[in-house]
Image 1 (spheres, rainbow, N blue to C red):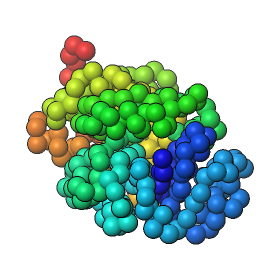
Image 2: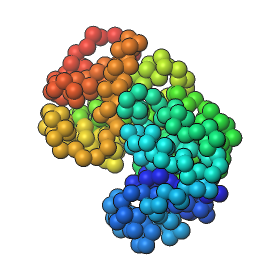
Image 3: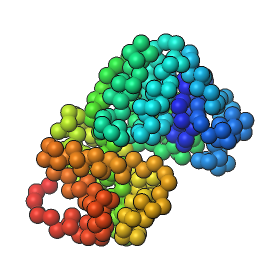
Image 4: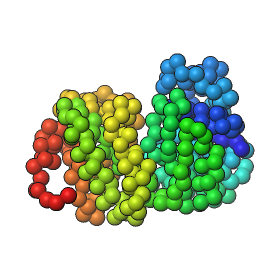
Length: 330
């Protein structure tokens, strides 16, 4: 079994650690030569995990030809890069491969889900199926071999089971699922809710507020996801409430961190002026705002995040307006 991971960032490296620990032939491909050299020769990815030793069996290269012969191609790049990366990778494949998606969001132009983007970008004779490997997981903990559970979601049950077997071990447990729509919408929407959680923490609110946000946030995720074809039970699993909890509460979450700075400043302009990281929840808030309007779906939390990010509304006023909405049953 040969696996190539496209992307030398934190999550790609964390998953390479899992595979190497499972004695799988795994190579990371990336474009940052110093980072690739660090992984290949020092068994470190100092950019993301200072001082953390990687399994020495992990290989790394800047040569995309390494994809040739791969049984599995795992994509660990931002949503904005998925289409172009697939188009670059496909010519090097000499057989059908399982494409594993780990991105959580939407295509930057079409708003398509990631699995649909991959299917549209990889020729049928090079693609076995798409499996989304998603759920509540921070790379910082996986690379340290802390207990983690996620889900391999696919329309192809056998390929999902293959990914389950290849990745599972005593610290990394993989479940399978077939609700691709619900799972991919769940993990995308939670990023925007996590931005809201960070904003509230930055303002100074505490545990009561976070509990309310997560509870009402999953209600919004379920409303939206169900309207677009997801199964309600999916949103109560790892790719729904599970991923929302970890992303809305953890210091590791970029979405939470970005929201925190916005809340502390009581102004989103600080994000637009200073942020240099990929924060998927920022664009997701805009996409979901537009899609929710199209189906007249009530999304008060997402709506306030959108107003803070894109209309200049003060976070403190947004929090107040959420509390003063018309009273109703839960």
